Image (cartoon, rainbow, N blue to C red; front, side, top):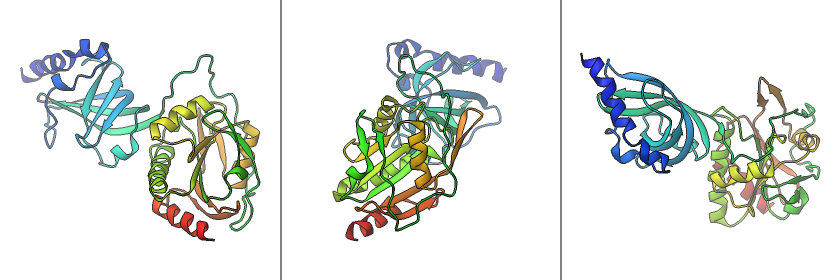
Length: 304
């Protein structure tokens, strides 16, 4: 009797705010209370998918425009308590597509096991899926101390940017793509660069460059949306795209490799510092670096 009564009760509690959600609001005020410290043996678990609309680390909540949860509630926009590693709030941003587990237990509900599945940009009329990827040449990366070959790509504002135009300031460079579904790859890199951006803003020097490895999809408009949700200022932090052949040449110079695989792009991870004269000062492969490491290298490169 307890189980047959519990589901309709929770469903009513969750579905009641649907009218508000359709008007563009959220349903946090009418939802059940936050989750207890542990779920009971009668807790129900549902697969959950949606797009993050806002993140509130202080309340440990995310607002999600989610798909229908079969057997529980229709698609709507509402806030959910989150029970997960606290670092999840550093990775999640508005516009992120997520998958998670929705737990409903004794009148409480929350999300756990959250996975990011890529950024969702504002749709562009006439946009098409990735057609082809031109891959970089392996083992052709510039050595530390050598000049980075000049290149010209397009930034998130639609303007052509030559790398040589950034000389006079040290520059941190990394590669990613907006649809990357691996939380510990591109989303983590973007989060680290956002922290570095805040540090450079405070110190008043340095530039950042993020180059997409998915130029067929990551148009200037897509990159502008992505940059906006990271809080990037175009004057200091450039997101670059361009002809796939040109992007591949740039990636080759930094020792980057990427290739398409089953609808995704498998790629190396790297973060580099280029000194004010355009020479490679340092480079880190993988995720074994922190914003503080790049800040240290940028300050060292700035002093020569």
